[in-house]
Length: 203
Image (cartoon, rainbow, N blue to C red; front, top):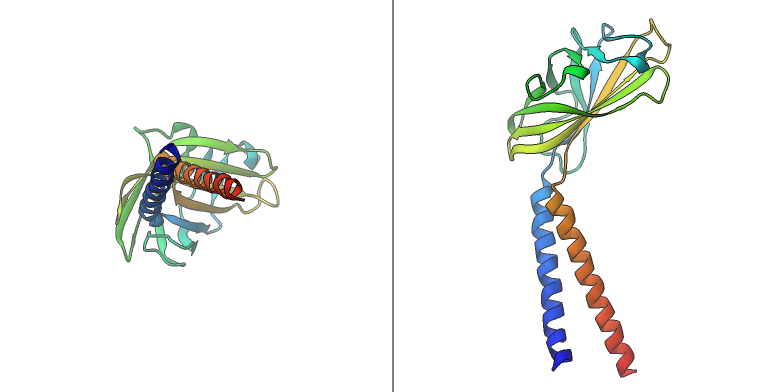
């Protein structure tokens, strides 16, 4: 009786897990996932050297999309323009009251990102610094969806040389997505384990 029940319940649970993971994956299929660059020779940062910088001034530069990845639903194409405000970013002051906003209009409509936290700063390389900001994005299929924007600044010739700025933008998978994926794999693993034991018993 117990074995017969397991043969019915375990596959049913596994199928439910797979269906849930599939639905969750479909919900996450649409995401923001693009790269951008700042064009212009007037970009500055302070203080120097660049790896010590706490602010970045993009005033006068043009920020454009450099590429998009599969599944990106930003509606953007390479060469499309983005707007980042304020142009002179003081990363130490970034907060919910003083956010960095990024906006654009693509084939999927108008989008606005509100970045309220500097989650990490990487100063390990000389003449370079990377800021990771997090917040939310609204527009198209997204409504206050968690997002991250990474800004890389490099100054290959050291202080006084041209500063190059590039970055990436992507939505952050919801924790429930990872949980359901783990449960789905666990269900499949248990189903495989039960089948192996059953096959061995018949051998």
